Amino acid sequence: MNYYISDLHIGHKNVIEFDGRPFTDENEMLEALVANWNARVRDKDTVYILGDFIWGKESGWADVVRRFQGKKVLIRGNHDPKTFTPETAARFAGIYDYLEITDAPYKVVLCHYLLLAYVHDFSAKGVMVYGHVHNTAEKELVQDFRRQVWARLEREGEGPMGQLLHAGCMEEYMGYTPRTLAEIIMGDVEKYGNPVAKLG
Image (tube, rainbow, N blue to C red; front, side):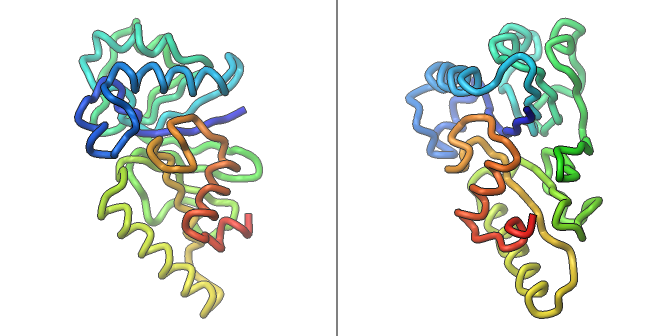
């Protein structure tokens, strides 16, 4: 099973207030993230982490990463190290800046940063999963763009499909828990009324 999540910001005290996260401090947040993750993910599962995983020096990463079950693939974010020690790198099944995978029936583009134009963006089976924007004005601009795309599709029946899916752990449909692509799509439909996702 494949799962997705982004912007856990483990060890980042200020992100709790920034996102309005329901934790008293970074230690409580870590324990909740580990518990939520391990309640779903098994060793054979793969979790694609779309950046900003741990807030802290790389020297402390290995001990934290080992607490999370499953095969972990990190799509590096702006707060993740540029290089990793062999000990930390060995805890991941892969570390990338950008990745394309198939999660049948979808062709999935994975990047910490939102790409408005991406491979397969004209297909209902093409999906771009991203993080980075948290609950900010930038995220609202993304949703405005998507509404414009949907309106054009309705009007003209052409244009990019707009399968842009935010996997930020702070999203209500994420619940600080890795989610399947189907769960993220359903959460996106319920929150934003994404008519394109319904086509998939």
